[in-house]
Image 1: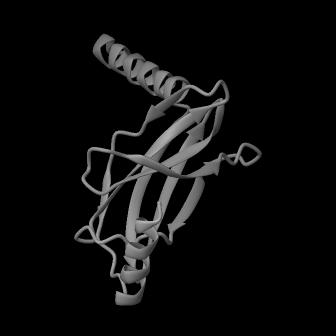
Image 2: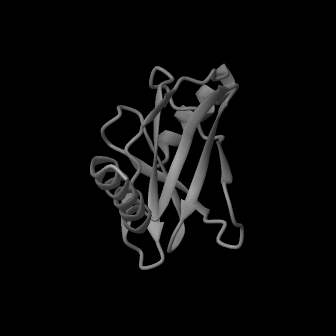
Length: 139
């Protein structure tokens, strides 16, 4: 066997194992789909290890992210897993651009962020837009 191939293969395997152990999950796909008054987030996970679940974070400016939901890990399922979360709270008047990212929450409550950020621009009804403004006044 070629020594370069062997070293490359071992390095790749170690990277994959350390990613699984450090991050708690290996996400193979993460996407958002804009809808009318909602955003549907989907992610596919190839492997999970020591994972409690996923925090879903949203930002209006791409810098200041806030947690909007928590999705429990499917610990009893084996193989590839598909997760879906629908954000029905997209009514604030911000130019209708929302940034989303995932945060892995391990069983020991340590966290790490998935590096990919999704930007989505849903269609928002005028009534929903007005209701969002009224709710924001009373926060």
